[in-house]
Image (cartoon, rainbow, N blue to C red; front, side, top):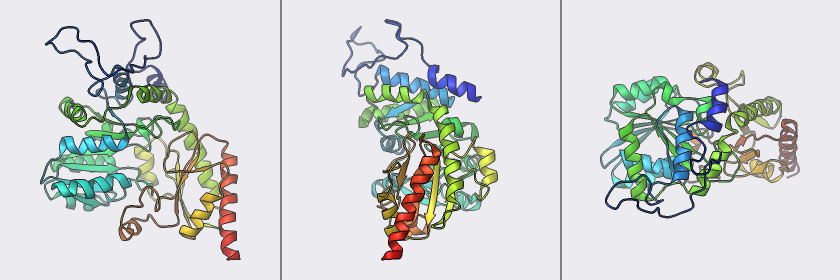
Length: 391
């Protein structure tokens, strides 16, 4: 699919004008129930916990963008991944998961599913041999996150999905950081993709949402059934707002990527920064894989400071334009200290093992003037380390 097609699909894909009055925006069906036409016969919409026309409109467009069946949309990214696990796993099953992964995914696998008899191995999936060794044990799901949150480490999606299928496992990719515009896991062999639509897909800090996408009708039906049982459907209003945000997704992503690369280049020269990570930098260790697998590196930059928690805390506190916050993918630049925010509940020993050190800071670069983003970050770092010198 060309960039032009992405622009078209995000605005028009999967939907026609409202058949009732011809409105070009789908109406918000803010209703709990729908009048039964014929008692005793099935109809598409009956109760908004099960299906809702506005949510279905979002699902149709997301499916068109992903090149798959209509998506299944949820009230949050966490509820999407929860439903993924509940629909496909049972007691005694085994999951292999990327070692560097969103903290909520790690928490659910370990703290919730672990108590229900599902075992999980967290493996460096950038190492094919390590992944294959983990798959020697009968495995139901291989869950990949690439780029990884927050280190941006990449996994070869095609190679790992092939391994999963050889061992009888389903391959799932969390593609929240890049979306189908910049990376297409289903085309690389994945069976399922998962998204927090809260992030780049909405892009405006207006909604909470998540979605699951697949080309397998039986799997999609399972997701819809478990969503009905658990009650985790997206709301009509949030679906409407997400559809509006989706329209500018390609434009936003390409500009945010350009801004992020400029921020990364400028921060490489900062004396207080030990390491700058962005897949489009020449210094990125997996640059060849990034070029092969992704359209571009995306809107996230991760930096590692020479200091630790005190310096990171002071730097975030000194920001004037950028916003210290626990999210990403929005038009505003957001700065996250992952060790104390997204991965705070991960055991310290494991967190440090994975490179999520106290000096690591994730920058979700927005659409502000990149010169002003850089100036704000530079002044905040100067203040943070000047205070260290005076201490």
